[in-house]
Length: 165
Image 1 (cartoon, one colour):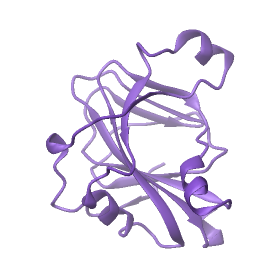
Image 2 (cartoon, one colour):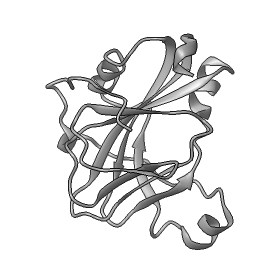
Image 3 (tube, rainbow, N blue to C red):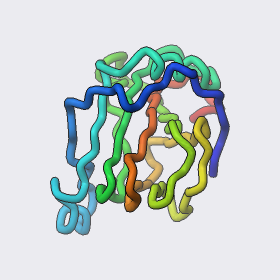
């Protein structure tokens, strides 16, 4: 399921990030509404306050877009991102409607307990810089059953390259 790999900038310093915004994850099914709440499905996410290196990462991924937003995400141990589809609403709010695509880039090598799944295919043992693409219709989930935070960068784009849709 890994769709590519980029060499991450040396300037990444995850420990220096100042996290201000935590959000409860999507609840898009009856089960997620019933079982997931702000005790077990909170993630930290920064958009406009993202560091310069996150924008530098966006420049490294395959081109086929002009307009994009970045976010840096931290999933703490014990938290999950339940089964959902992304809405990609921030890129459309900022740049207008269009076809969207999200690149999920793993910032560290896989650690025990870090988990991602798209459709019905689990993904573990990634390497820092590996990425996957997520379309709006792609159902996926993630979580951290480990002992250390799980970090990623999301680059959400309005596509101009039809092969990326």
